Every structure is written in structure tokens, then in C-alpha cells.
Image (cartoon, rainbow, N blue to C red):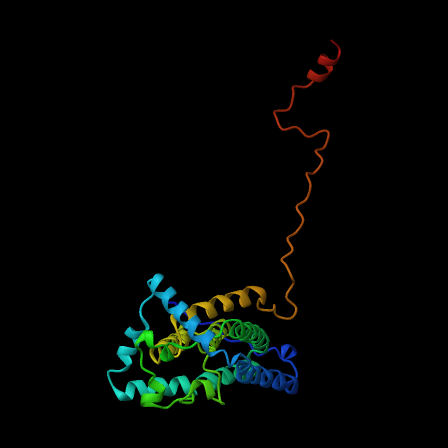
Length: 281
């Protein structure tokens, strides 16, 4: 007899775990605005950003990390490929994260609250590091020998002059929230879904990693640092239990040893009259 393996059906969303829509809209909008404009606070540290870039580049060589140029060489084989990478960098980051949050809110409210908290903690930690450690990306550091693919091949989200760019702070390379958010999206979808193919969501952060490095917008260490921050966020903010789940398993109490009756005996019964004869001696 043949048995077919089937995946467990997904449960209906627990609407009791879904927070109010207006409040969540304001919170998520605030998260995106903090990311967009909070980075501007780290602007103006040009000399420090380039000095830190030299230190990061030297540290990567000391650690014998693969050169970012190896990934960029693959992209530069054709204009179509490098332009696709630039487009991915410029247009996928925000929409993918927003769609992820909207889908979780509708289908998996408990996972939505968890992922939103993790994203908020990660973004706050990243912005603090942007302030403490301004960093020029490898495309601006002449020692790397890398091409600014956005400026040369397009499209780009950055101005031609980094020090006067009014749209974005180009000296906030570490950590890479492009990679951090992509990894959060993948982990959230893997945990929330039950498909046997759910591990394929990891392609999103993998492609993002190759794109941010190949376009020379980030160092390998930018992705390593944000992965460490994300690990800390997951450790500090575990997934909430479903409603009605006990905080811990309760095991039935082990009964104490039962009293042994006086007349019970574990060996062969004594011959009649044995106890009486022993007692009379």
C-alpha cells in the first residue's frame, strides 16, 4: 500500500493577534521614514567616512575575504546584467519589505508582530552604527579599483557628488540594511509558511548580497555586521506563542511510593507456624 506525503494545511489567521490597522500603518510608516531620513543625521563626516573605508578594506584583506571585484567582474560581462543588478538595488528593497509586512499582517498576524519588532530593532541599531561609524562605500574608495555601476550604467539612486547629495547619505554603508531587511523577509516567510519549497525564499537575500557587493555599494563586512545584529534581535525578540498556548509544559506529578500492606510479602510465604515457633524462642 502506497502512502503519499502531504504538507500540513495552513491554519486560518488568528485575528485576535492582529493589531489595529491604523496604528500599524503609522508604526511602519515611521520605520520607513526613520530609515530614509535618519541616515541623513550621519552626513557631513566625509573625511572620517573615507578613513573608515580604508580600515574596512584593509581588514577584509587581513581576514582574506574574497574580493568584491570578483563579483563585479561577473556583472560587467554585459550591460543587461549590470543594469538589472542596479535596478534590483534601486527598486526591490522597499517594495519587497512592504509587501512582506502587508502579507503577514493579513495572513499571519502573530508572525507580523514578531517581524515588525525585529525590523524595528534592526533598523534602530543600524542607524546608531551609521552615526558612530560613517563609512564610504567601495565604489567611492579609489583603492578598491571598483566601478560605480550606478553612475556608469544606470539606474542609480545616488547623486553624482556624494558630499552634496540631498536625497541620501552615501556614507552610511555599514551595516547594509539592504541585506538585513532581505534576510529578515526570508526568515519571516520561512517561519510563517509550511511549503516544502519555503527555503527558496533565501534566494532573495542571496541575490541582494551579490547585488550590493557587485555594484560596489557595500563591503562583505557590511553584510556580516548586519547579520550579527539580526541574530541578536532574534535572540532578544522570540516569536510569541499562539493564544491559549501554555507558557510551559506541565508534567503530571509522579506519585510517591505506595505504602506496603503489613501482610504483603515479596518472598515465598513462610510455612505455617514458623513465626509462632520463632517468637517462642
